[in-house]
Length: 163
Image 1: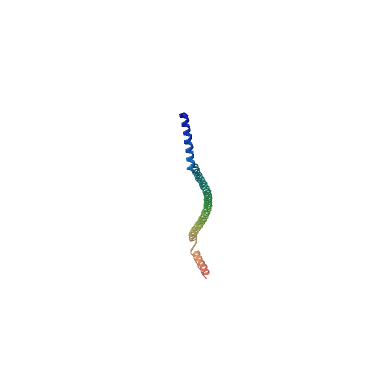
Image 2 (image 1 turned 90 degrees about the horizontal axis):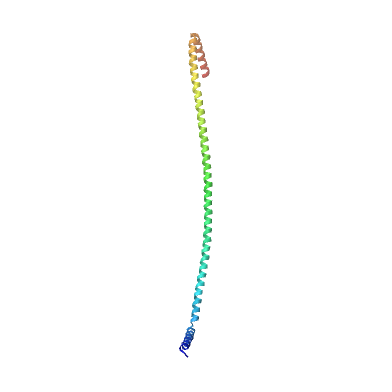
């Protein structure tokens, strides 16, 4: 045997001894067990991740529903506020129109009263002027006997009206 063959034999013997040692120490079982444990951990991590994803999806759905509900509530509040504002505007407009109508009526009434007062004042002044003119005309045309007769007639009319 030459040196190369001897080296090959010893390498083969070493390899066989190494494989026997590995089998005796149960390295393949330990590796399998280690790989199984790692696979279990990975499976558990994946299951946990799946569960967390489902929880997150449920939370997302819940929050989206809450957001939609909040948006609907906000829209209802805005609509109610707009209706209330429209009602208040209509009420204010009606009250303003009523106020203007009352003020216009009051102003017209004051104008009518002022016209009546002015007409009465003009009439009173015209009566005073007419009486004054009549006094002057009667005084200029009447003599003593006519004045006495008018005076007596006036006194008798006053007496009849007082009784």
